Length: 471
Image 1 (cartoon, rainbow, N blue to C red):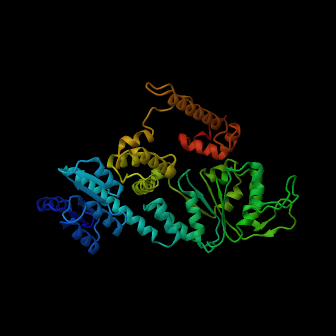
Image 2: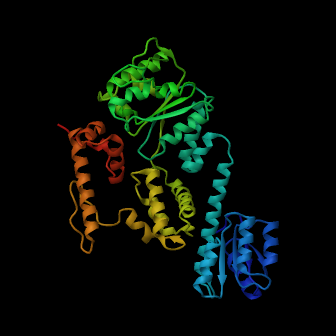
Image 3: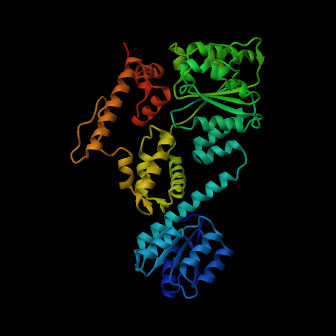
């Protein structure tokens, strides 16, 4: 447990029990501060901030809950573990509502108490990381706060710093949910254009017939129904940055017009006269390999090279498991505050499950799983039993059809499983027929690209697995 000999404050009016706890935690590598009443505990915490507190509720000079409130006022987020001889449920509820990290009745189990203190110290260390990252002013450093403190994210930070000061067009490639927009936003916020507009457009979320006017705008009278002038995203971002998400969904005809805008640095709205000068930096992103798409003729090679003056490849979450504990704890704390639930830690077995999961939906999927787990937890800690159903440990759906009814399942559960299986089968069939082309598959399924992307993430289907499937 030795984390640079962290100080632990033990507040216990029984001298023998206080000495016992000092011996226990000094043997675990901790430095122990002892206080025998509430007043001395609060004074001790003012002179040296403890990393965790073991607090007896039955103190001679003041109620232990008052001491708890005072400690948390002085040190927000300080993990306080309650020890008490009282067995009433109401006392435990009061302590948890007041912000206690954990709660034990005497006589306590030594191994369980040591484990609780270890978790408290780990949580304190993570909170220190979050505070330190928040204190860094450079926007590129925000990536560590948002994505994790691992080596892969540090490399991303360095790439963002390198390219941000230039006017290079940047292409960011990564799986859905890996954080492409975070990286693109960090490039803008770290650049000399940071005070100017940052305008985003998801090329897969807008019908093809509307994309050109969304990008480049139009003049009044340009077509039937154009009763007034409309500024496009490029004009709105003049002087700043345009972020084109899922650029692979851009139709070939529009790719030619975008290439002309990038080459000539001029913009001509639909129905417009003379081209207008344009000062915009473009960052683009896709979950598809644009280089492969260009070689296959599904994306213009000249536009690909124009977009990728600087390339950034985002690792999937499964490729940086060192960030999972940080992200999971961050999402847990956010959800606990939002839902007003006293969940404060992730048990080692549950953390092992999170680290071993492949995360096809990446960070977005991790956040959703942790939020659902906090809602369903019903206790102070996330256990493996809560996470297993959320990580797909239940009955598997077949690859191409609805699942058979499960013994003991409700009618609603059977219906939901059948619907999910049918959706999965239809999506896989459409991707096979289109050789993995998401735009064509969406048209065949009579849905929009955004909805299809969401379903692909939900069912863990990768479009590139179907690229050679069509005859």
